[in-house]
Length: 128
Image (cartoon, rainbow, N blue to C red):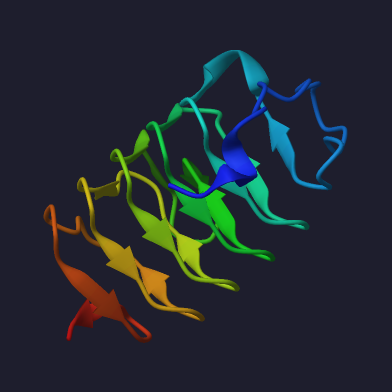
C-alpha cells in the first residue's frame, strides 16, 4: 500500500453534512466505516437500513449508495467487503453485498450481490 494512507484518520462524519473530503452520509447512526477507506468527493450514502464499509475499500467520486429506494420500495443493508473497489459515478442499490477484493467498474448500476474477487460493470452491472 502506498504512503498516502500513512497518516490516515477516521473523518468526522455528521448527519447530512459533507466531510472534509466532500462526501456525506444520511442516517449516520447506521453507518460503519472501515479502516483506511478512501471515499471520493460528492459520494452520497443513505444508511437508513445500514451501510457497512470494510477496511481498505476505495469508492470513486460521485457514487451513490442506497440502503433504501423510494422508486421501487426496496430496502436492506449494503455491505462493501474488505479491499473492494467501486468506480466513479456508480450506484449501489439496497440489499447489495460487494464481496472482498471485488471491483465495480465506473458508471455501473449494481442491483445484485457481487461475489468476492469478481469484476462487474455496466447498467445493470454484470460479470466481465
